Length: 240
Image (tube, rainbow, N blue to C red; front, side, top):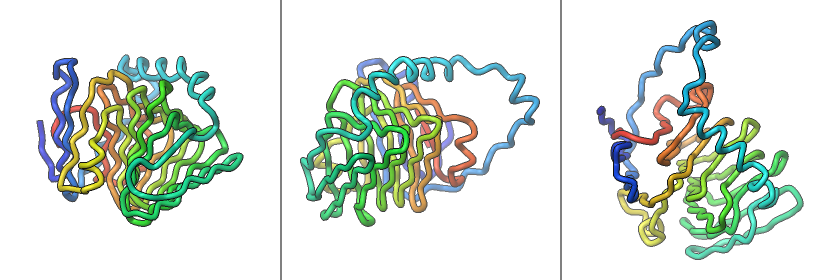
């Protein structure tokens, strides 16, 4: 098991099912040399691994329910920090006036052609989904600063989904303590018992931070690595 200076300590996938614990540090990340890419012929012949089929089937089964949650996030309210939430027909904007904020949402899905924009400066926003539906990102999600999306029911970025942030982006089925997040210490601990998946089939990018997909089951489409800077990582197990 290798270790880099990215500072994300994660337990082995053999962790008992009473809940894994992840520690997400704010240390700078080392550049990771890109792996060689297989030829097109090899990629065509190689069967899709079971680890990919499972979360894809999971996502397809939940799509109608995620869409039923609405084309834009619903019932959001700041529980820590300050800001305003303004929703239109196809655009929802969050103007955060504090450096850090925590928003609880009943649902957080974005329909195709719709946009959710966080104007949080160079700060950070923790978004926690409290309802019973997974988050399905079919449209566009942007933030000027860092963005955290927490949903124990699962998170899926669809094939046309786009996530773009100015700072760190974290999508996880595990939870973060509000106080630790607001205080902005050297590290954040994510913990929980969720067995749901984080699936990325679209584009996720950050102009000034790292990208983390954290869950017991995580799928990142192979082509996705082409859109991430070398030091940005998507991970589900191991110690980096």
